[in-house]
Length: 249
Image 1 (spheres, one colour):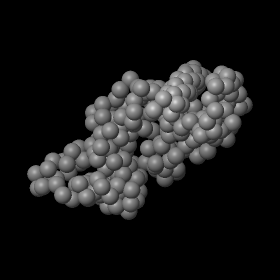
Image 2 (tube, rainbow, N blue to C red; image 1 turned 180 degrees about the vertical axis):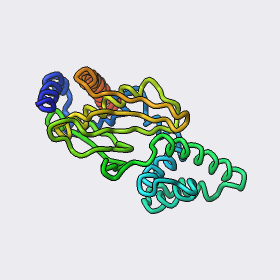
Image 3 (tube, rainbow, N blue to C red; image 1 turned 45 degrees about the vertical axis):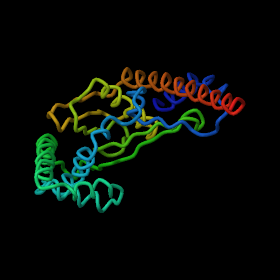
């Protein structure tokens, strides 16, 4: 009932937003974009190779409970995935001192990750890099997130899922909105709100833990409405500008 009510509320709020928008292409809004609509890219991914290496080690930590050689193991995981070849070539080309500095930096972040997560029991059903997404407005808008760590079984009578975002930079105020967006997406996707959402900084060891309640979800809903409306307005302006350019080359 909660998820259905939120979805209906979103559809009502956005009902007139697309009246002047003729494109059939859906608008994609990842959680980071909902939290920071002015940003052109995910701030965490802007941390480059370090972010990719540390995030790869989340799976290593879940499977083995400890990481022996962080840089080597992270590179092996990224090589197996096959989607970070330029980064791996760049790391291999580093000179001795630069490679040593990178290894130390990855090890420092990994030590924080291992200390703060501890050994996670298999009974908690941990899974990493879990993609969650939901469509609203009849598929005109897709909201989604890549959850670094998801814990708990699917909800039945009570909320049982916890979502964790891992960042390699100090925690910023935008993460509150990011976590709220993740909670809303999971609620719409699964039909049940998560119990908690959290963020951990491997740069500082600081963390945020938020209980998921009505206020959190409604706040995220309003952000989705505002960001979607602004995105549609921007696309309409771009489309009009393109049309004028074709008429007046």
